[in-house]
Amino acid sequence: MVIGDFSGRSRPDACPGALQVHAAADGGLARVRVPGGRLTASQLRELADAASACGSGVIELTSRANAQVRGLGGEGGFAARMAGAGLLPSATHERIRNILASPLTGCDTRSLLDVSPLVSELDLRLCGTPALAGLPGRFLFALDDGRGDVAWLDPDAGILPVGPGQAALILAGADSGLRVPVGSAVAALLAAAEAFLAEPEVAQARAWRIRELPGCAERVAERVGSALELGRAAPVPTPSTETPAETSAEAPAEALAGREPVGIIEQPGGRVTLGVTVPLGRLTSAQAELLADLASSGEVRLTPWRGVVLPGLTRAEAARAAALLTDAELVVDPASPWTSVTACTGRPGCAKSLADVRADATLAITSFPRTGTLPVHWAGCERRCGRPKGRVADVVATATGYRVDLDGRSLDCVGIEETTAAVTALRGET
Ligand code: SF4
Image (tube, rainbow, N blue to C red):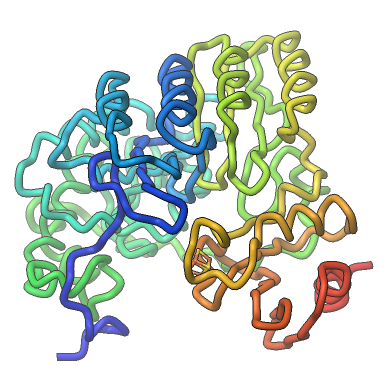
């Protein structure tokens, strides 16, 4: 039987965890799941301290709003510290706690539903269901608060509120047409995960995601709909993944490359949330400690765009935080070029890489500033790990330099200045 593009697979996924450390080219790599991206300030402090004491001193933010630390030695200790901080509540289920949530949920008027309680409930029930320990570590849940910022990030199972007390069940990144009472949302997501696990190819480790199996989303929907006696409606169309050419004018607090909140966002009641871009998703321990110190509400939220939001600040706190974070080389200006540039790990962390793409991307931004807004993704090889969805200018390392790909056109370049000029030329931005 042909299984999508994955018919040759017969192994479990190898996603790292805090316990299952991956041997990367630059040492051990541990990934800490952060359901909904929610951390307390003290948890972030502990993560920062453990990253310095046990690893490279840098926290990498992932596109699932998780955190990872590289350069770990073989002596252990990192996982124990994460467990002590409450960041490793289940040894058996740690790698499956991949739960996205709208980062601004409950913070502004665009939340149709504050999904924070659902994040906690889903995490608790997920870890409390022994059979679900068998889910692949690639399986992704998403709890969207109605603004549509995480529902379309290709979750295997998610919810999107569509009316009072009712949510669309998202399967394999699209609306299944099933409608779930909000009170049954977690039950529906768990039922979807169980239905996926019942597929024979999943038991054989030949499939890690619902979309990999032809017809699987429909079979899962059938099982969930029957089990919970759910109604159906016309599916919400999946939005185009094309990023509008220029969106900064229409949404100044939401930068490009998705819907990353950057800058000051008004909350009801006079408080504000501060959205922070973390250049290339790399947070030093010192920057993390500063964020923890500035989180006066005690809460820090990681975003799927490898950034951070600090909710519940007064205006004065937000102004002070913005100044201090800027001094610490974090970004609170939605017009900053850092908001639209991403990069894979590259050298020295990835043995497959042909270049130190993070250093080159940094050089490109700092030495050859550009004015355009289309997302740019730098990758050390053709796999293009971490590439954002949608229309993106790809800068891919080659044996002789970089190749820039956009809209089916390619330009081979030597040197960063030439590469930057090629990005500008292909994007049509001057
Ligand atoms: S895109 Fe290639 S070089 Fe970059 S992290 Fe992935 S495998 Fe490594």
